[in-house]
Image (cartoon, rainbow, N blue to C red):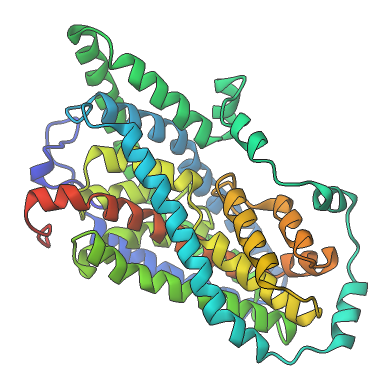
Length: 442
């Protein structure tokens, strides 16, 4: 969330470089995070009228901030991608880069699943499962008809592929369906790159100006990050508090712990494979992480991701304009981690035998579904239920865990956003190698 440095050559419309405010903004955002969490926990369960009045008064401010961030996502993605494709690096194959990104997505998802199963399975077995408790929990859940219908649906790869080509691109934009928009933008960029030199240069200048204008708008919105973080974290902890115990606590702690562990492992992995330093990677991803934990939306964190990648890691336009939007759209690293923990935990508590074949099928299904999950709170939705039912998990058990998914969802988004930056950093390895050195610290 810092302003560009002089070597970026980016200036304000008035011809002056925008003032740097990243360090102070991050510091104030951290302070706001602590204040919001503390106040929400202390006031949780309070019956004082002023508490609910305060929460209701603050809620519109948080919603306005989130909507302002979400408002920029579609134009940011399209303009950044087209500017990257039509810019000086247009001779580099976007298609090849997209292929590499997808292969890296799949590799990281599979590795995360294997790591999670290896670590979480013995930890889950330590939890003392009580058949009577499981039976009472199951009996207390009313299963919606929509959930039962979703449980009978099978994952269709063909249906997912057809969904990549919308019948109305404007409707897809209104719905915030980034993956179809990315596909359309890539095809449009490839077509525009075949134009004669003069009109192609005009389009490149236009796209670059639009992309720079979007970044200026995003900087204006990010100024309100501390306020947005404070309001959203206060509302979250005010409603959840620390009331979860027993069955729910065990699940929340195990899932959150695995997500945090995998998030921490991304730092040395990105530094090693991306040829950067731990310090620079941490500085680059920190602003986006703050947005992630307060909004629980990886799409809302995309503007801060692009800012951090540009200003701290000096990533190219191909990385910020294509890889990061693609990653934020389809790459949900948490899915094979959180889903593996959930299926292992539920199978243990409800006495469901889960063999290697069933577990492998479950991971493969979740991996496919992860590419169509939205980067917003609850983006996976009830569609994931089919994978659990296919593994033998009762529908009621899945619905029970949905009630306490708010807390792990924070760490899911944190991991997703960190994974997005990690992918872009790793894929920029070749560019960093040509530069011959790690980007120096500011």
